[in-house]
Amino acid sequence: MYKRILLAYDGSDAGQKALLDCRELALWGKSELVLVAVMPSAMSFVGLEGGVYDVELEERERAKYDGVLRDGIRRLEQAGYAARGEVVTGEAVDEIVKYARKVEADLIVVGHKHLDSWAARWWRGSISGALIEHAHCSVLCVITR
Image 1: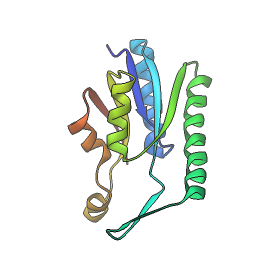
Image 2 (image 1 turned 135 degrees about the horizontal axis):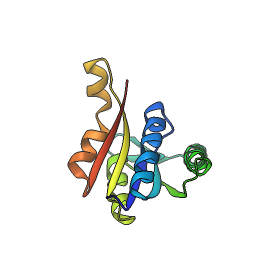
Image 3 (image 1 turned 60 degrees about the horizontal axis):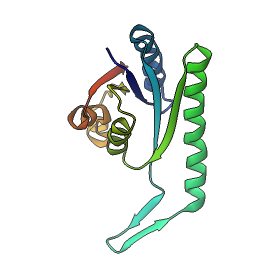
């Protein structure tokens, strides 16, 4: 089955549900669990000329994402699973796909929340949909409403 499962984890309700489903898959297939949290870049672009880098913002965001990742790993460990993970920085889809290749994941698990309005779906985009298009391996989207 799946030897290594990568969970793209953000601590949201959809992420929590994906964590639970990921545990069940790992138990069934005796898989290794790896978590990744993707932190957006602290670079803010100002026009076409360049951008501004905010060190304090990056430190706060890094602490927040480290906490989310530690919480996910702790939840898995409390349930009797060994897990490891890392916080990476960049665009979510690109970084998840890159990290999945790095850890040689057979499956990427991601939470997905259905959005009610077409405007919200258009504005936010779909990370799970883009992962399906770009990943080298299978992608499981765990749906929440």
